[in-house]
Length: 107
Image (cartoon, rainbow, N blue to C red; front, side, top):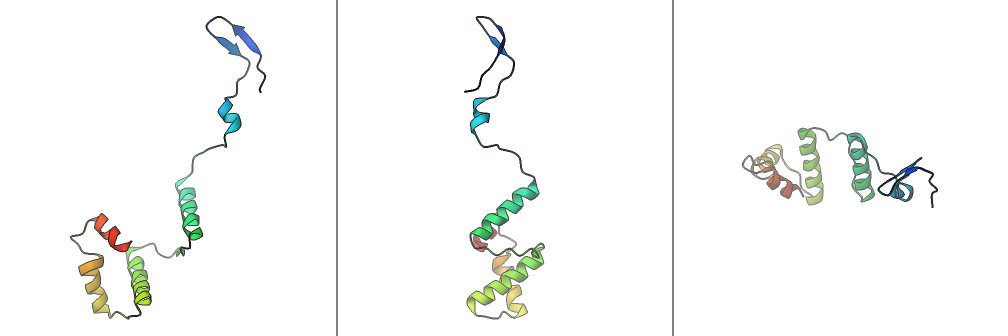
């Protein structure tokens, strides 16, 4: 237990020369993360779960191209450009869908 030296004492309060909170002595330190640190930790967690990180996927066009490659590979089909455009317009990126609807489709 820590030792403290009282500077002043009254029936209602005490003044110590120094004080260290008990929790601060026994809890791991916590801190704040920058957005970049949070993203990197999230990416590391996903990679540990078996996801592949593709740093080139930064635009909607790149995401759509990757979705096309993945769907073609998983289903052993080759979309023509017209078929892919129709699939995107009528299902994957339907203008009437909400962001939640689109997320549900992708997941």
